[in-house]
Length: 137
Image (cartoon, rainbow, N blue to C red):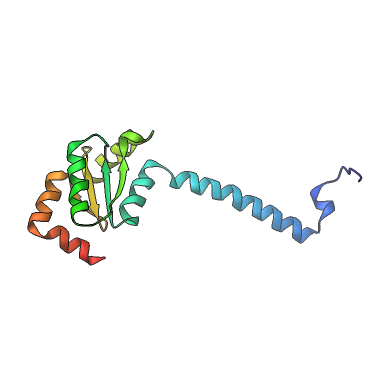
């Protein structure tokens, strides 16, 4: 085997070189897109709109436990984000303040609609509003 000191362009044709270059640029741009979409704001939006039920919670919070229990009793499986178990939990909570005007937990969303906290969820169940929202999807 022989080691050659040559440029990439010499080893492959011009069109192959262009394809490799474009692929490398797309790969680099793709990393920037992934980086941008992993911001706390993008994460919150993704959770809200990609899940039938989303709860932003803290694992030790009794009001959060009540909200999760309500969905369990309705045989629904929410997507739960436990803010106290995440490094970016504080940032996510700040985004929630911007999005819904509250930074308290739980914050419950059904089919992209903000329900509110534990008391709001309990009231939505009592009025039948929650069951209507759950049947939409």
